[in-house]
Image: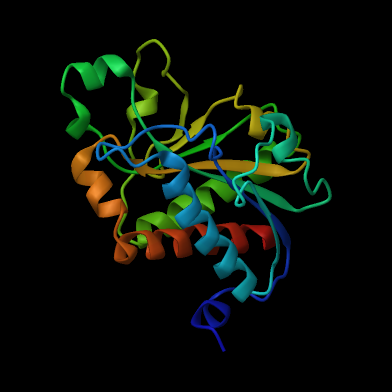
Length: 217
């Protein structure tokens, strides 16, 4: 029996695991030149596998690289219990141009108050944050910086949970929904760490643990 299955509460749920971006629209570019979509795919595939090992039903979105509109991602399985979107972070171009890439590292978690299941979304965001902290990760508070394009309200500083009401995949989801920025790939030091299986496998398991556990709260 899988260690993951033994370690998690016995509660099966239907969870949508969204791989952020697509092959044609790959998102941010890491310091090495490797694109965000590939990092998202590595982590989201493992999150899906860990959830299945825990007994959950999983629907994956964009893991095949096919184009899909943002508004349709969370509606792929509208009767699901929870939606989690996996991303990796960049930063404002002016910070990159100023050589400040190494100033920010860590995860960020987002919820939208426009989601019809906001309270559950927030519970799940906190559950995922707790598991990421337990795995030795630290939150990045970059998105709360009071600058144009950021300034996202920080709901939980310790767990790196922010409110971003306009995120399409969160506000259009008919179920509770969370977006996780796993780490900052424009930071060359962080990108090297995130590219290693001994880093991203525990990260994925932490996200899966939090996503699974919050379904019974």
